[in-house]
Image 1 (tube, rainbow, N blue to C red):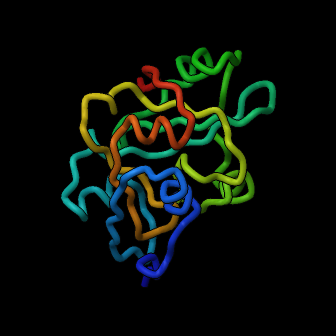
Image 2: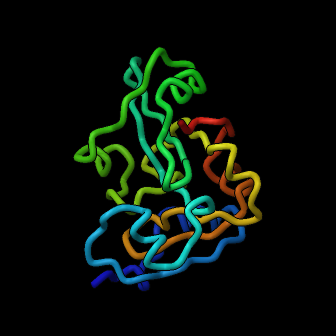
Image 3: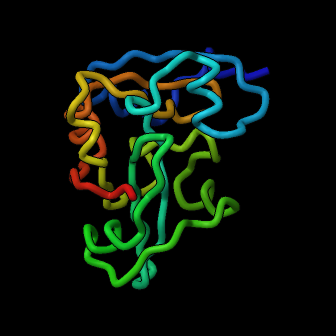
Length: 160
């Protein structure tokens, strides 16, 4: 069973330091399947629930994209947005070493390093969005503008 209820993640500590309002929702998670499965479990709308994807550009640099859970990242749009010829998804085995977070708990706030981050523009239509809390079994609810500030993110259309 998930022990997230006792966990204050790097993301939560950063939001606290920056005095950014958020709330945490905890849930039991023994095995992460995907974000859509979690949204279904919790009765959350897909369009307000966002996943964090990490990519590697042709230059070797890493980029973070935050998009609605039921959408796919448009790699051409993503590359253009960050000024790369192309980007590809970071291999799942490298997520922890690059970000400091595990698959299913990866969030754009409080990574080991601050990577260029892009929030899909669809987030701006909502007062509050939901992102991973930085570990399995925790989600952060916050305003999209506060996510932009905390993650030093750009906003662009990056889904297919």
